[in-house]
Structures are given as structure tokens and as C-alpha cells.
Image 1: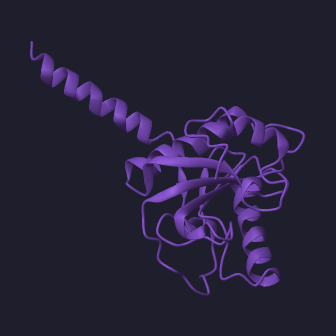
Image 2 (image 1 turned 180 degrees about the horizontal axis):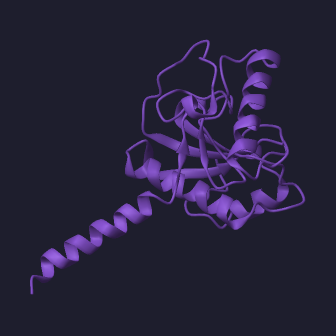
Length: 187
């Protein structure tokens, strides 16, 4: 029996299964409007900033696509930002929604946008914790960013409130963040 070949094949199958754990819904798939401007992001990010959208939580792909369009309209039309301010959003359906993506500077955390990836969980998490699968998807996205070289292997994970005067990411999510890999109480 060729054990090295068998082990190599099993490792490949496992990596393919792990890769399929996150589904990234592209800008094209959710019907994003073109951004008004883009600043290229120089990777890898030193920080991952976790945010909540302070909106309702979507539970299906259709609901999340609609919410993405609402968020983009709010950010572009009301806030006058060039696009959705986050790099990615994680829906209550367990999918990742591409906003600015890996290669464009976000507009989520003044003073940190050029050195961070902003990941927003769709919902408001002051009184309730996000479901486990939504948290796991966010964590898997971070691991994927490290794997792709978009996030530094020694990144610091922080909550939005640590760098901006806001309740985000909500008290329950903020408490949970303190148990995630790379959590940093200091910025």
C-alpha cells in the first residue's frame, strides 16, 4: 500500500471540504452598484475589526441580498461614502457577502482603514449573541484571509468599539470576541 499517496489524497479531500465551508457571495451576485472610488489595499492587514450592522438579521440568501442593497444605499446615498464601508459582511444565513473585498481599503474605522479588514456581522448584538454558525463563518473568513496572505498571520482582532466611539459590535458579540483567536484587548 502507498501510505504517503493515501495520506496526501486524504489531506487534499480535507482541504477541499474546509474550503467549501464558506460561501462568498460576490458583488455581482448581490447586485452591487459600482463604487464611486476605490483605494487599493496593501496587504496583509495587521488588524481584523469586527463590527455589527445594527440592522435586522437576515436569515436567507434572498433576505441578505436585499439587506446588502439597503446597506449600500445607506452608506452611499446617506453617508456619502464611495461604497459599502466594510470589506465583508456575514449574513444570518451563514454566507459571506463581498463588499470592498480583500483588495480595497475600507471606510469602517477612521485611522485603521489602511491597516485592517473590516468584517461586519449582519444584525444587532447588544442583547443577543449571533448564532454559532454566523460566528464560525466570520472566523473561517479570517482564516481564509490569512491563508491567502491578505491578513497577517499575527494579526490583532479587535471590536469596533475599541477604536471608535460606538456600541458596535454590540455587547454580546464583544464579549464573545474575547474568546476568539488573536483577540487583543489593546489597540
